[in-house]
Image (cartoon, rainbow, N blue to C red; front, side):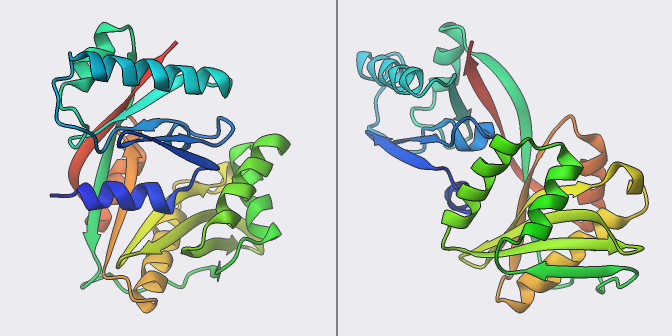
Length: 250
């Protein structure tokens, strides 16, 4: 039912290169995030996971990532094709990593926009946003360059949010719009400003901005072990629609 959401997540968080392998989408971005450096087996011929064709495809994917100097990573969702791929990867020694929740929120009855602090939303990547995000996450120079290349290559509508408190950037985040959805990414609060409701204020600002741009719903992805973020998204009314995880070949 929500396979379209899975497609939109691939589009709104880009990779530097995508290669097709009989319906599987192999993405690379110099190792920046598993989301952009993994196999997404959304499509493919209907055949048993134990068949020789699937085994050969796994081997070809491993060779591709070996040449790229990256670990082979598969993203496993309810829409993985073939259905038994997760078990097969486990048998081949792939470990499970980062179980996560995909959640959606209808924007019909958004809470009122909070205006306790100054929120700025840029529709193009700006140095101010990149600098704030890098400082708040400890992003190194090389990885910062990769992120900038990925984000600026996208042709989708983007909103780079910066929340200022006392004149200083205290929280930041990214919203990307496609097909009536605004996807939220990289919601971060600076260490000295946490537990003050700033992330909630920033998210509401992004959602109201997205609604003004024509979005009628929002989605996000959160790692299950991130209890603080999950509690915030529960408070905002996001509901889980499915879970996913990664299989990593060490």
